[in-house]
Length: 312
Image 1 (cartoon, rainbow, N blue to C red):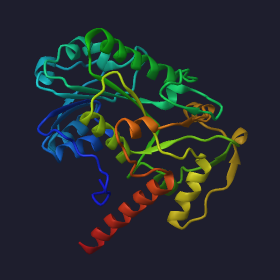
Image 2: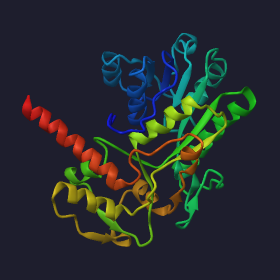
Image 3: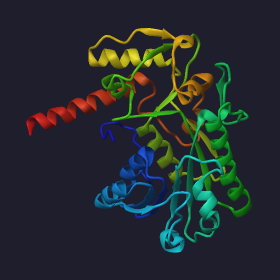
Image 4: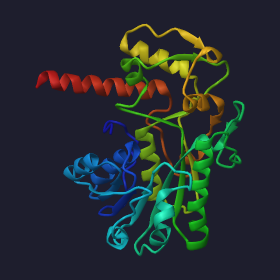
């Protein structure tokens, strides 16, 4: 977290308990923010080694996947006030919903639920702007499954009063997970597809939106969480190379590149995502409104870490 940033959103309530179904990259960063203010955080993982690391770091961890439900849902959830749902859906939808919808609906102290979805539910919009009012029409199986999971949780909101908030995230990046890392790893390619753009969002701005929502709950709300400047993949890679002081890889035409189906599906969708609602309703000021600001922050953070290591 960049403590020098003047508009960092802090939780208005302290000493609450967050349970994360899926303790991934975004959940980790949200957890770190909340724990600074006295929150207790627990979560699930599919990896025994990660369970050990989480527990050592002060986050009680349970094993969970579609074949392994929580051993004692009442014990795990009865004192939880806030719930974050971030497990990628499978063929039947969200594993947490499939296995524990009834347990979640019966949680006695639950004040807020956040479901991390994706702007992929909007599908291809031929470069047009989308808002939360745009009708979802996913064009990939991944998008179909995300929309199915959204609808599962929305049904629990409508019929059981679940205090649900849905966050449709653009391409997530941040420290250790950015174009800079792809360039360093030698996996970055500058694929040229004229007119194709997409939004991104720095993980710190995801945290901003989630904490702001916790402060001002509005059950049933859907929020796009994206930066201000939709851009091409090629220009992002070029800027990352500039930061690193190396020549960018050559541009390659989209129709001449062999790529995995999951990568090709990314290029099938072309849209620009409006983020006005997190600003107007939640009062969020983006820390990194475009990829230049976000990648520069990643680069600077890495440089600071290297300097610290050198000094030590």
